[in-house]
Image 1 (cartoon, one colour):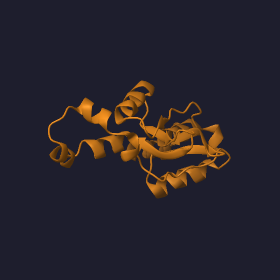
Image 2 (cartoon, one colour; image 1 turned 90 degrees about the horizontal axis):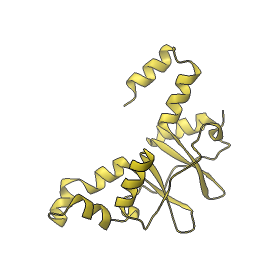
Image 3 (cartoon, one colour; image 1 turned 135 degrees about the vertical axis):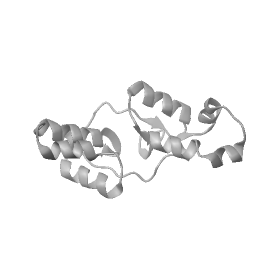
Image 4 (tube, one colour; image 1 turned 120 degrees about the horizontal axis):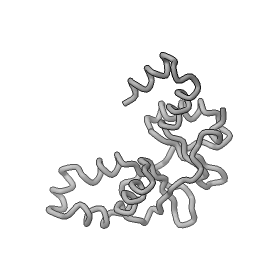
Length: 151
């Protein structure tokens, strides 16, 4: 199976100059945890996740540095480019699904933007892979073990 057969095609992205507030809102609206970050020309430059937002913005050291400020104000003040992860591991639509799974395991990431000709054309997530495994043989012990042990 190829990445193109499993990837989500209607990918939400965010420009690197937009605020973390915009990223949070987009994630909530789309019910997603991974948001590819693009530049003004639409080229992939990073990725921001719900974990990045929690880790970078809500650590105690941040509040020691800036003092007392509302969460809303903090989210609006910080551009996504300051907390995004870069460079980003990517796959192409023609890559085997096994390649995507291996990349996720080796790089310890929960999603891979799918890039073709320098543009984000999709995204494949750990949830997509687990759903595929379960659809293949929903009653299998292997599938049950993976789902139960997955963090």
